[in-house]
Length: 326
Image (cartoon, rainbow, N blue to C red):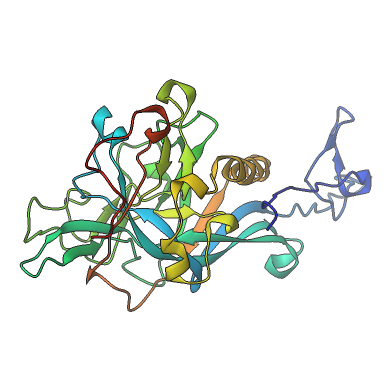
């Protein structure tokens, strides 16, 4: 399978541009009438709206691995980089990235088929029957009809190169650059019968800082020793390259760090295209529309797969550690 590529053909036909008073062609602004004034009257100039739109569907496209938060092997301490990473198999979903042009309509606009994860399994603990209990803390819109969001760009993950970005969905413009961007969401219980409460929400019906970000395996920047991390989720939508998707859960469970495809290059190619097209919009719009799932799993017994640590290639093998399924 070839690597996904993303590009924009803005075209070079100057017949489709408005000429400024300084004689410059204003790229990406197509004309209906290029003569603002006649000798007698003002003529209307129709300028199409052009912005980026991501439509996330409920249609499953395959399966991949995702890191499990809440697990003892997941933490912020440097030492966690050397410990095996806990993972779970999750479905991927079809999404449509649209370079929207109002003069062509959605059907005529350039579109790309991409894949994202929607689930966010959180490790609760092990019950008396030795089964691993997890909760899906995925974000779902509270109201299926109020599912369209603006976005706010940041550098994410923090350990990645600065050119790797993430995007917070926002309910309105006032949330831009705020510390917390709240989204009204389907309720997620934060109670944990096996330990500390889930910390990703303080209000069970409000999700905080949901994001569209890089998913699958990615490599950290040089100052973070090029650690190889498996991406996780606390309610986000993670982009998964096609090379990281398998047809069945069983095939996805066999993905290893040593044979994994790393998402960095594909993600940067995708986000570069998004940002170039977005930045040619006067309002710099990148909108996300999330189709609500109903029903979807919340609490479940899950198999936790243990894969290599982020820095396994830089350290000596650790005694007593072996790959296993809990």
